[in-house]
Amino acid sequence: MADESLEVGAHLDACLARAVSHNPALKDTAVVIAAIAGAAITISEVIGRGALGGDLAATGSKNSDGDVQKALDVIAHQRVTEALQAAPVAEVASEEADDVMRLNPGAPLAVAIDPLDGSSNIGVNMAVGTIFGIRPAVQDAGNPIASFTTPGTAQLAAGFVTYGPATALVLTLGEGTQVYVLDRAERAFRLTHPSLDVPATTKEYAINASNARHWEAPIKAFIEDCLRGAEGPRDKDYNMRWLGSLVADAQRVLMRGGVFLYPGDQRKGYAQGRLRLLYEAAPIAMLMEQAGAGATDGERRILDIEATGIHERVPLVFGSTEEVECVAKYFDGRNHAAGRSPLFGQRGLMRS
Ligand SMILES: O=P(O)(O)OC[C@H]1O[C@](O)(COP(=O)(O)O)[C@@H](O)[C@@H]1O
Ligand SMILES: [Mg+2]
Ligand SMILES: [Mg+2]
Image 1: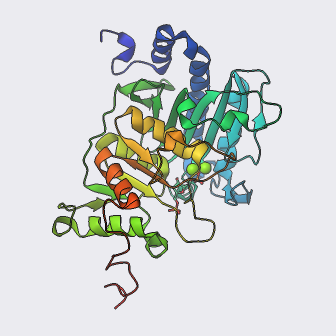
Image 2: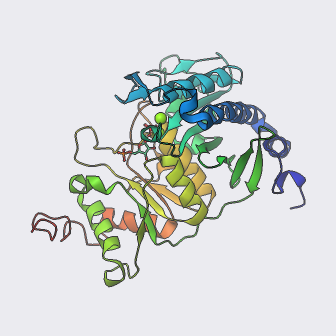
Image 3: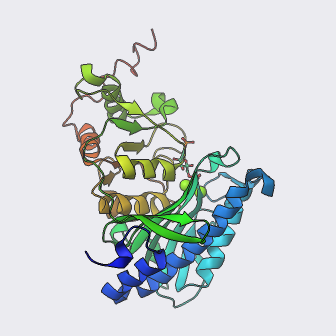
């Protein structure tokens, strides 16, 4: 396509302007994305100073999910909220606010946002991020969270920023998934990957294996078969990566393939896993699908699920389509491996 705004190196603003010229209905959405990108640049600068700027991991009160907030969680929430206040946003569902925040009554859009993802990595100089999904605002006097009870398919755009070695914005407006990298000299995001295409096959999985004894049978069976490598039914040797930062794991999967799992498990409060539907799973699911990958809770497409609460959790499996489909088979019994795990079972190899 001969369009300068899609060329590597093009500025985010030019790419957003192009998207709006193709689809004028995206005008407000583009303003919101630019606002979040602006906030992300300032958050990136705070993170970039590390401990020189104070203790970003200092703990304060608890957030809506019972997690202890760190200083950077609060800073990021303030920066994105200020930016969204100046954008056409009626309501915000933030991880760091118990209830829906009403910003500009009557404005057309609603934003679900995780201002700072990967909080356990704050203070140890590892990648963290910001995740967001933008939806039409829905007016319903009888339902204060109406804007957030539509399925993920209602999202007009979704993205995340990774504050890693480079600060990157991974974005979709429903026509592919693009990556922009922050040009620190210009304080502007510039296009590096015009269209991601996640490989359908992979040999890399990501899961917090310390929870293995709590997993349900289909997950135990799937991981056991990955661990058996070329000698097992999957017929290939796997590699494992787990960064403890959803955005960083998601970016790796988008760039080179892989499968990520945060399933429900038997720990108290973890029946639906740890990750939140509105501001973690749904935006990442849209980015994955737009890059040719998949996202499921094991049984349902993530983008079809309707939230009943703004901080609702959901089991999350995403990435290369062959692996995501394979996990679904363990859940619906087409792979009859569930429950037969010698590695994780009651009388398993690891137990004696
Ligand atoms: O510590 P665990 O249970 O492995 O969970 C790690 C997951 O928790 C998260 O940090 C949750 O996000 P928040 O930091 O925004 O609460 C994800 O980024 C990450 O994938
Ligand atoms: Mg998070
Ligand atoms: Mg968070």
